[in-house]
Image (cartoon, rainbow, N blue to C red; front, side, top):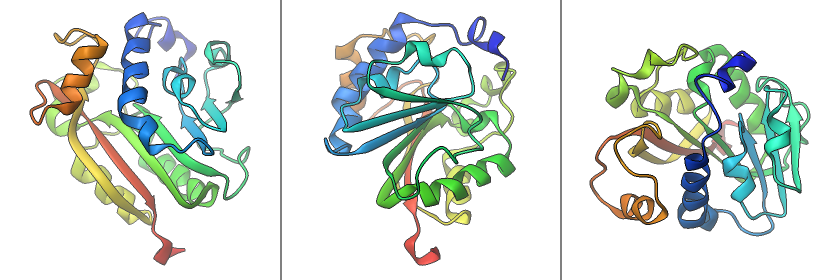
Length: 215
C-alpha cells in the first residue's frame, strides 16, 4: 500500500476519532484487563490503540508516518505485517486489526496467523473488524487496495483452517465507512451497538484464539 493512500483514499478524519473513542469505551475496553498487553496491527492513525487502557500498548504499520499519530506511551513498529519478529513470544493478550486483511493475500494472512499464534499468550485473542463481502460486495473493490474478499463465513473457516477457534462472530457489526448516511456521534454509536437491528451494517467482527489442541 503506497503512502499516497493516506493522502487520498484514507485521509485523517476527526469523525474516526469519535467513532473509535466510543467503540473502545463502550465495547472493547471491557474485554481488556488493565494488566494486558495490547497489539494493533495496521494501526493507521492509531485511533483504536490510542484510546485503549492497558499496561502495554504496541502498534504496527508499514506506513512510515503512522508513529507521529500515536499517543504517548504507545510503542510503535514500522514494518510489514508479515514480519512479527519484533514481538516476544507469549507476550500479547489482545491483538486487534481493523480493515487490514482484505489488503493482503491469503498466503500472507496465513503467515501472520502462524506467527501470531506464537506471540499470543495462552488465553490471548485476535479480534478482526473488516468489510463483510456478503453485504458489501457492491462497494468492496471501490478501494483499489482491496485484494482478498471475505464474508463472515469464509474468514471464520479460514481462521479455523489455520488453527484458530472462532469464539465470536458478528456478521453486521458496523456500517462500512464513515461516509454512510448515519451520523457519527457517541450517542448514536452506543445505540447502534445496542440495537438488534444494524441498518447499513456491512462490517463484520470476528474474535478468535489459537486452538490449543493444534499446538
